[in-house]
Picture 1 (tube, each protein chain N blue to C red):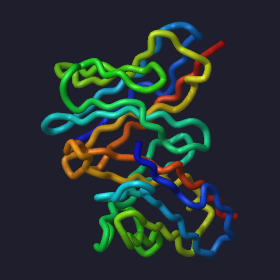
Picture 2 (cartoon, helix red, strand yellow):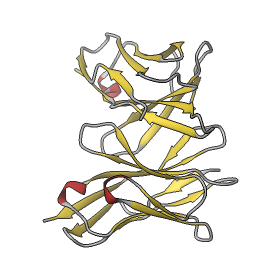
Picture 3 (cartoon, rainbow over the protein chains, first blue to last red):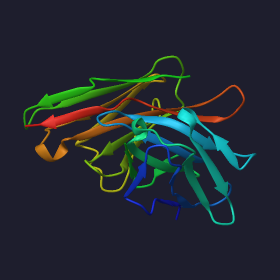
Picture 4 (cartoon, rainbow over the protein chains, first blue to last red):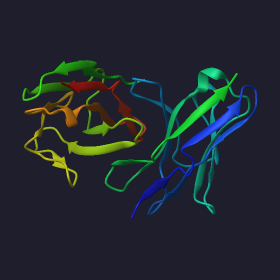
Amino acid sequence: AQSVAQPEDQVNVAEGNPLTVKCTYSVSGNPYLFWYVQYPNRGLQFLLKYITGDNLVKGSYGFEAEFNKSQTSFHLKKPSALVSDSALYFCAVRALDDKIIFGKGTRLHILP
Amino acid sequence: GAVVSQHPSWVICKSGTSVKIECRSLDFQATTMFWYRQFPKQSLMLMATSNEGSKATYEQGVEKDKFLINHASLTLSTLTVTSAHPEDSSFYICSATMISGTGAYEQYFGPGTRLTVT
C-alpha cells in the first residue's frame, strides 16, 4: 500500500537555525513527492515537488527538499528559519490513480 | 500559476440544513477534482474523486448520500453537505488537476471552506 509518514508531530527550532521536517514514503514505481504548507484557517499552499531529475529540489520561501531513493525519504529543509515559517507542513505522494496521499502533518514552531 | 477558488470561504449553518460548497478552476480546465476534509489538528482525508460528467468516486467510509458531489463542468465541482450535523463541522478543501502543456501533472488546491454546524 502506498503511504507517507511524518514521524514528528511537532518540531521546534530557534529562529536563524537550520530546520528539517522529516518525511518517508512507500510507493510503487517512481514517486511524485510534494510538500505543502498550511497556515491557520487557510488552505494548502504548494512549496515544492519532486518528479524526476536532481535530488535536491528548491521551492518557495527558501525551502528545499532532498529526495533520497535508498532511504525512501523526502525531508524538507531550510538553512535559516524565520518566525513566519511557523505553520503545519504536509508531505504528500501521488498515487498511481492520481490521488494525493498526505502525511499526518508536522507542526513547525520557530522560536524567536 | 493556476488558481482554484472555493465559495464560501466560511459558513455557519444550523443542524439539519444543507450547505453547498463550490470549487472552481479559474483559468484552466480541470481533468479531475478532489474533495478533502480536515479535522482539527489532523491530516487531510480524501473524501471523493470527481470527474466531469460522471459520478463521483467516494472513499471508503464516506457517505455518498450525505456528501453529494456534482461535477457540472470542467471548471466547477460542488460539494453539498446534506442534513448537516455538528460532527460535520470541518475544513473542506478541494483540488483540481490538469495536464500542463509539457505533459506534466499539476494539482492546485483551493483555499478551503470552514463549515461550522450549530
